[in-house]
Image (cartoon, rainbow, N blue to C red; front, side, top):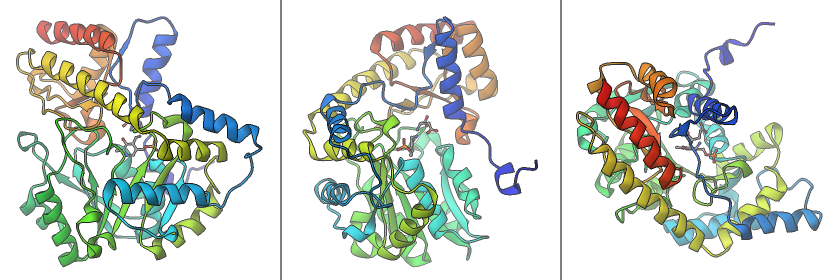
Length: 387
Ligand code: PMP
Ligand code: GLU
């Protein structure tokens, strides 16, 4: 049976693939230290789990409206007001099966055949594939490591054509951990107005920031910008809820309406008990978020401290996410080769930078215990010394 040309172009998610390979090796008894994890290693907080259990016990196990239950939409509206200073009507919010699904819906809703979507590179592995699935073409905006992967304004301008439909903003960024300062967001916002393109702002790592880095939602810069921005967020990273599959977006009402219809014919509502869990996460005590953030910050410090001791290796200091993205070009090999050697010889799992469009780097996640990170860094240091 022939696979459609549309799907033939798509490669599997390398991040998910490597994580499951590392987990399988661990299960088979191989002592692998996993720096590939793309999710918090913490348990979902107890009060969130309890809300889902209670929902099941109360018989909340049937369909909800396709775009999510009204109580959760209300809680998301509150969250946008509280955290981002953004006012949305209920008709502008859609709850989906994870932020990945929200992004997919957004591209399907706005992209036309032949459109171009600008993606700052390094980029999260899923963006280009979802853009292609929508019929549009990804256009990569290379950013320089030495300037913290910030957007080069001239380069951005040079990529704009009559086909430019949207620009993706991912701040803090997976895989680099870097974030955009306000002045960059203001520049991008002005350009979007002048050149008439849409902004897709992926804010999934909003709560995991360090050194007092403040995430500013680009949509909050002005009413006009809000009207041309689709904000993507979810509970996966902030509340250690990756497996529950709840994400959400906020968009202009017409776009949200189209996405609601689309979702009603594709997935219907996200799992009902998961929606109750997300409701408890957004409305409950937020101290669990700060506790996890603090632990991540300590681990980020540990990673940076140890990596700075490796001769030849350069690494930007992340202001958010749970990733570092060291430059390993001193090893004179491709990121895939290094990843394979690290797995087979040093017994540590990392993600090759090529998955994110940058072959000179590897991504190392610090979503693991300090003890395990320390042990893995010993192995990494030993590997780098032998080269
Ligand atoms: N955006 C980015 C940048 C991510 O790293 C992830 C994590 N996979 C997502 C979106 C999707 O998150 P989820 O679908 O688990 O909510
Ligand atoms: N965001 C995670 C990562 O980049 C999860 C994996 C995925 O969804 O592709 O590793």
